[in-house]
Image (cartoon, rainbow, N blue to C red; front, top):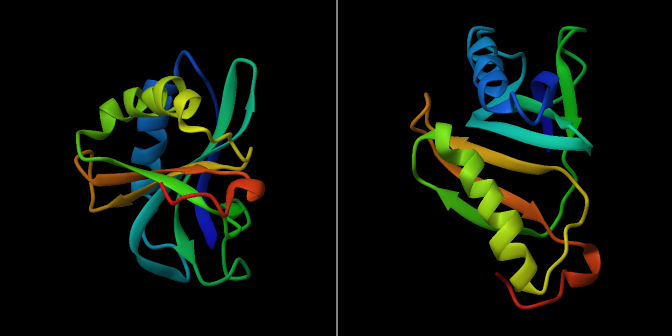
Amino acid sequence: MLLAGLRRYHGFAESVYSITEQWQQFQSLGPIPGHVGSTTYGVMCGEVPGGFEYLCGAEVEAFASLPGNMGRMRITPQRYAVFLHPGHKSAIRKTWERIRTEWLPGSGHDSAHRPDFEACIGTGMAALASLLWPAPPEQANSTPL
């Protein structure tokens, strides 16, 4: 899957506010060339001590027609554990924390160390989000989650 949008670094401490600002800026961009479907994505990657990189974007057909300043990301096929977050987007961080501190340690699974992401259906802060946690390839044949 090819994603395009705004790609930025966020410190953990300010990410609650800075990601909200990033989404507002993304929504003000208008249509993205080659946009596919109506789902938007928030993708976390490149985690380092103190912060991480985040892309808010949409699926696109190809990167070739995108403006030069637009962030790009390729999500390779992967097995994911999927969690629904039906609440307000402002509380999504708590759901991610519960996945990392409660579900993952007791699941028998490890992280695949690939991007974690949110697939948001609908618009605005109340959109339904599916949170996708990548599982490593050696666990791909385990019982579905």
